[in-house]
Image (cartoon, rainbow, N blue to C red; front, side, top):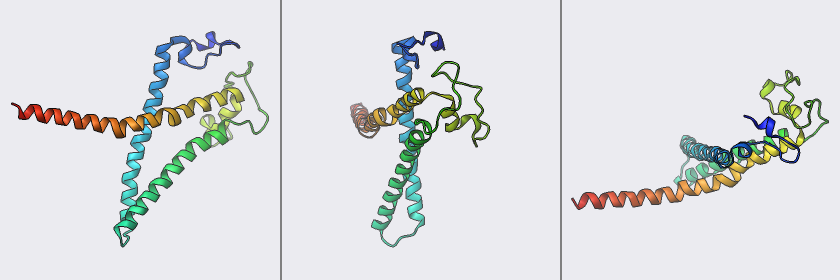
Length: 181
């Protein structure tokens, strides 16, 4: 948007909240909520996959199959969390080596910095690390952690506790109204 013109040293413009106030904040929070919903959906899919894999192992006792399923779920959740957060924390946010190139103004993206040696080219974490200042990368890291660690637990509670209770109450209400006719 117009953030490049609103940016100043005393008031940095890094997100939609600066220009659009409450609507910009709502857009950012809605992205975090969608991310948390995707985490919940993928977690539900992983439960089904783990149950399927545990069934393929053809263990003798049902308790062993349940234990295998739970261990697979735990391993997938740990790999997912460590993969997402660890790759950002160790490949993107820190400054391991002196910066190779930055834009004409510190903190701005230098799109002319060459990243052809990386496997993913311009979409590689290391390319962004090369093109962005360490302060900007740390701000991006902090912003990306807000969704999984602040918003996701509340969305999880909403999906696992409040929505089923609401559905149960709604079902009871519908059953009472259809019986009264």
